[in-house]
Every structure is written in structure tokens, then in C-alpha cells.
Amino acid sequence: MIGPAPSTSVVALEARNVSVRYGPRPALVDVSTRVRAGELVALVGPNGSGKTTLIRSALGLVRPSSGEVEVFGSPVGTLSISERAKRTAWVPQDESPYENVPVLDYVLYGRNPHIGPLAREGDLDLSQARVALEAVGLWDRRADGILELSGGERQRILLARALAQATPLLLLDEPMAHLDVSHQLELLERVRALCRTEGKAALAAVHDLNLAARYADRIVVLSRGRVVADGPPRAVLSEALLFEVWGILAEIRDDRRTGLPYLVPRLPSPSTGPRQARPGGGFGPVHVVAGGGSGSGILRALVAEGYRVTAGALPMLDSDADTAAELDVPIAAEAPFAPLSEEVRARNRALLDASVAIVVAPFAVGPSNLANLEDLLGYAGRVPMFAVQGGRVAERDFSEGRATSMLQELLRNGAVETPSVGGLLEELRRLAKGPSVPAPSGTGSA
Image (tube, rainbow, N blue to C red):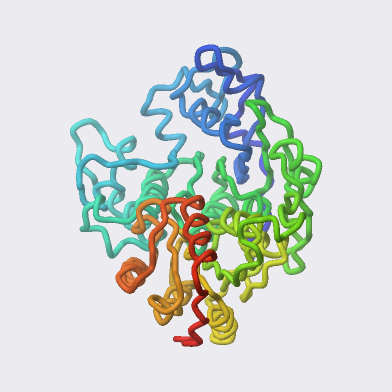
């Protein structure tokens, strides 16, 4: 286990009474916080709370209307671009390359601050780039074009470029965008290790409060451009704060293995009221295949409409599993972060056998949950199946294309694409009003 962050008094980043306005709209209001060497600080808050603006202010890309941001004691505005780049590396939310340059060259861009004008990369630069690519597991793709990578792979390349830059401060703006669960954990493990072992400082804007609680030394909470909490996860996270900032009810629980807090969000259940008055009328079970929050809205909508619903296979602590528990939806549950076992797959197939319709949410697919799609292949064309669209499939396929192939096969064999949850509900209403309900297939294909 990596130990606690080293004790140090070096302040890597300090914001003092920073305010930023975009025209008449305030984006940051009198924000003060600091990140010390050896610390990983999570920056959290709802969309539009000012997380990206604070990071861009620290990079010198946004000039505060008042207040000041310092990097290792120097006001950002007094540093040249080269000086900033030697102190601070940035991992943006997303980046769209215009040219299909080789991956290795793209990572070598991070070495530019260390290379003199008109000079070429030296052995040290190439070594740093190789170490960075190996760290994110993509050295074997070094000769491929950057545009040939999936969205998740490109996000890992952005981290590799920042690692190759070899700066003492990392600024990460939603670095887990497009990443599946395993790579989210790997990224945060690696950043925390850099803070612990090399004394780097890191400020990471994240949306997942449970990951923030698990990995960050401190959590800074922004709401409407203001800091409303700043401190260790256990001191910051509370049911009152979640309601105040995010407008949700939640239970704070302790992970028995780590002793760290984690959250189980809860909204007022939509399942109250006379079921017979709702369009679903008890029709079902409708089985939802999801994960990572992709199915929470679907589950809520189905229960609100009065359908009987099941779901799986889902790892415990997954946000979709928490939503299912809140709504009393039966699921096939697996241990957190574990691949789907044959026992769990058998339970999931039993739920599929009993279903009169199957809904496939736009979930990210990797090696650990690919079996969820494999087990659907025997049901397409036998049980009505609906695939809810959610952006380009390739951007959530982390299985070397196998998930994309399986989804295409499901569609060829009769699965129906729906553009939204509303479109799904229309399809299910038509199905429920049909002259007869198809009998469950009982195929149980593995």
C-alpha cells in the first residue's frame, strides 16, 4: 500500500480571492484554496460550478477580474508560457486532434518546454515519452495515428503527454472522461502514486464523489462559483452538503475494507401511487442491461411508468446498482471491480429468461462486463430488445471492438435502436398494448 502523502510546506498552487466573470455572469466568486506538494486534491461540484474556470485560471488561460493565482510562489500572469509549461502539466476534458500524427510524436509534444529552439528530441525526451506510454499501457500503439484511437485511449494519451512533461504540478480537468471503470481506477492510482512517491501536486476536477473520497487527500467543493467546503473527504462529505449543493438525498456509509466514506444517493421514489393508473400497468418484467450510471434514468423512468423491472449483471457500489436498490429492482449483483463470474451470469440469464422485453443502456463495455453483451446474443429475435442510443459506440467500447461487433449483431438480429428514454417508453407502450405478450424465451444462451 502507498502510504500517506509526505509532509511538506511547499505550496504548489494557491488561489487567493479569485473572481472571474464571463460578461455579466460570475464564474468564480472570491475563491481561495491551495494545493501542496505531495497532495492530490479533488475539485468537485455540479456542472457550471466553476471547476474548469479555476483550472484554466491556474494555467493562465483565464485572467481573474480580481484576486491572484500563484504557482510555486510566482503569480501565473508573470510567467512566460515556457515557464508555466515547466511547472504545470494539463490534462483537459477532451482534445480533438486535427492531424493523424503518430502517438509517440503526440506524447513528445509534452517535452517541448524542455527542448531548445530548433533542437530535436534527445535520448532523455524519448525515454520520458516511452515511460509515460508504458505507464498508460499504450506503448504498443506508439506508431499508430492519434485519430485511430478510441476516445478512452486518447484520454490516456493526454495523461501520457502530461507525464512526459515531467512537471511538479498536474492539473486534470475531468480526466476520466471516456474511460471505463478499470482505467479510471488506474489513472487515479497513478496520479496518487506520483504525489506520494515523487512529491508532485495534483488538482483534479472530478464528478464521481466516491472516487474523490477514495483517492483524494482533500476535496474542494464549488457551488455557483464559490468554495462551500474544503478539507479531508470524511470532514467534507455529508448528507447536508449533498442536499445543499447537488439537491439530492444520500446516505454516507463506510467501506469496511478501507474505512473510507462512500455515498448512496437517494431521490424521492417515483414508485408511490396507484400502479394501475400508470401506462406500464404492471407489464413486465423488463430487464435492463446497464452499468456506470447509464441505466439510472432508464430504471427511474420504467418504475415511474409502472413497469415491473429487473437489471443486471451489475457490480455492487455501481451507481446503477444503487439506483436499483433504491427502487427495489431485483438485480444479479457481482462484487465491486470483479469480472462477471459464471454464477452471476447464470443469475442474470435467469432474469433474462423471465423477461418480456430487454433494454440495453449505452454503457461502457470492457473486459470485466463484456459478458453482459455475450449473454444477450441468444435473446435477440426471441425477446423484444431495445438499445438506447448514447453517442458513438466506439467511444464506450474498451474491448478492442468486440462490444461494437456484438451490438451490431444484436441490431441485425432484431434489436431496435431508440434515440432516447422517451423513445424507449413509446416502444414499450406499444408492446404492452399489443394483442399478446411474447412468452419468455428460456434460451439462457451463454
